[in-house]
Length: 274
Image 1 (cartoon, helix red, strand yellow):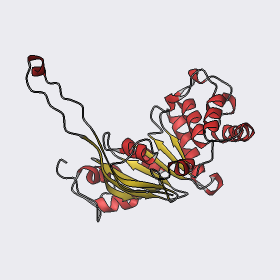
Image 2 (cartoon, one colour):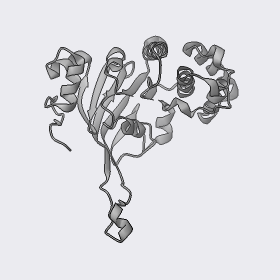
Image 3 (spheres, one colour):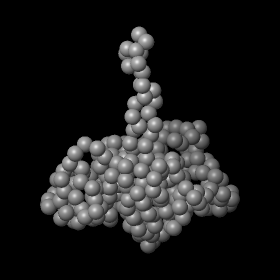
Image 4 (cartoon, helix red, strand yellow):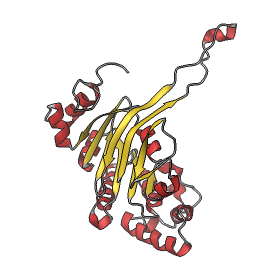
């Protein structure tokens, strides 16, 4: 289970260099950039939770803080009760992270890429080899394992990156925009894989994914957290969110919740610029 409590993050701005600086005029520093203002939610085991929001809403920054890649200015993340910042090693051992699949080593085979991450997670050669074969079968990677990844399609890269994230069999999984660049077939395969991983047969994993594609989130996720302008503005199932927004269509419900005046109890409304 993953618990996110009151996450906030600002990025320091660099020096401003206006055109008149060239003539000795005053310079200055831009105001800090707010990545996340306040994001809170709970992701349960055996369920797929989706972070849904427009581009720039703060989804990726939130995912990075959840993975322990950047420290929040406020709030905390608990992975199975372990705080990511205070107990980083223990928390991360229970977490698999799927970021950009382009981060594969192109001159290594899929097997070698996965084995490298297995070593980083402390798996011995025998255990790693066995686990790679298991993942190859689960993810349909078998014929690709001994090929160099430099010629892989986006879908093949995604499968390899997912195998890396799962190599140590973590009970929790984070996926940032996992369907970006995938064709219809690869998207369907990924969807089926994630459903299996969340099921009892797949280990009942807690899965959190971010996306700006409403249809994908609606089809795949048990729980949806809507993030807009760095805040959690609503959460629940598709039916719950439609009911809160007073809309029969999920797209209309999302627009009202993310950009309109509708709010859930305890959630801030976003009718004015922040």
